[in-house]
Length: 233
Image 1 (cartoon, rainbow, N blue to C red):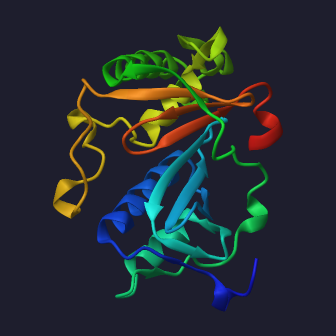
Image 2 (image 1 turned 120 degrees about the vertical axis):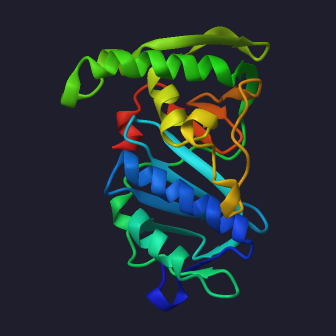
């Protein structure tokens, strides 16, 4: 992956640095030892990835560059680097954490659109799921709840219905990708972020042979179809 001197992330726009800061903060809320994978995506774009703890990956794309083209950093170290970003937008990602990432990433292409789901529906599902999970106390939500398909979508490119498990709903809300006024919005507007997501907005459900993908305004979540444990643990 290269030497420490060669490693780095460059995000010239303050808004992108704010977005990545919020992404890293939310990743740490889900997992205090979260590792973020930064990967070049096309010309002038960087994708930030994190395993949410629900056997679901979350991603956010930013304008910038990363060297080497694929590296991993601790979310806490990345936050420290963002706080000390240089005038050119250079962010020190800290000590290499490449060995901590054990799974593969979804493909960039090959996803077909199935359907759009209103944000309000996902928020209501998340509230219902959280209420059920709270009944189990510190043990957290049972696997049966996480694996339960709470939505079913169909599309012209898919012969059979595709279920969306509660895992994906929890990952979307946990990462703040569908955050509304009651959740504090997506990113604090006073810090250069964007306004909260309105109930009338939709998330787009896409599918590939091995992956389910849900795109929201602030980011996307990916669920391995089949046996997620093979790639996320």
